[in-house]
Figure 1: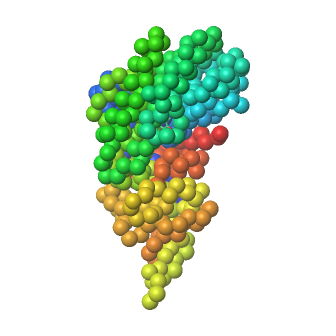
Figure 2 (figure 1 turned 180 degrees about the vertical axis):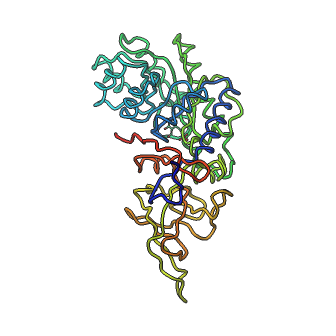
Length: 368
Ligand SMILES: Cc1ncc(COP(=O)(O)O)c(C=O)c1O
């Protein structure tokens, strides 16, 4: 029996299946157009059912950010997994075990990481991470440090140098689409150039990987690249709408919430409301800068993809969400999170929704 969204207890995480399917199809066709494979980052959804849809649309392999994600997806038949996180030396035993079961690839940007893998006797594929301007992790693609890592891997008896990757997280500073194309080109040029330098030194580099949702929304050239790894595109969120990489109609994930307390408008106050979606439903991601600060946007009309310009979340405590505007106790609102990956990780399951009805429940594997 299909349950109506109107009857759901709140807070509930709603996943709009139509929008999800469109997002998955659009990215798959973009990858095909550029002649690269798509290895989606599944940290966004942590959900086997969503990854299966991505695979059916043509995704090859997946990207994860934790070994727990890697294990769960391996248990469900995903056998080509990139752990796109700087190697954690205390977890090399788990890496070794997993690499015996599936095609696991790990990422390094330091000699210490290579030492740890070799000391554990892990036989595993390794990619070198380069920094394309985000300045979080990765070696300078123009420096010598990366070449030295390549030489160490090429000489290793247990490790196999197979690829290079980068992630243009600085694209999240763009607004209204401006600058995205330039950062996408920076991302491409950095990693393709580094692959060329390794090859010039006689090393084989089969995989050249880029990807963030903002840069993949605007990229015009992927020469020298073999795969893209966006993740957030499955759901999008308020931040993507501000960056200009998606519209409100492209956002698939919302939190359904109820007004539980309300303070009326008075001569000195505009009034406010409290909803049952706090930091443990939306995360405390404070969202994009350069626009009116909000902890989450409320829809004026979900079906018309229209956000309310007056009522929005302004502060969150653990379970309370405080909004502008006095709403009636019992009124239900749909909230567009600032960051869908973080909001999804707050819940145990998606209520999968089509046409106003809940058509399925999909588990979220958020163990760490
Ligand atoms: C290494 C790496 N690759 C790919 C992605 C996916 O980027 P996005 O979430 O913008 O789709 C991320 C996201 O943080 C990442 O850290």
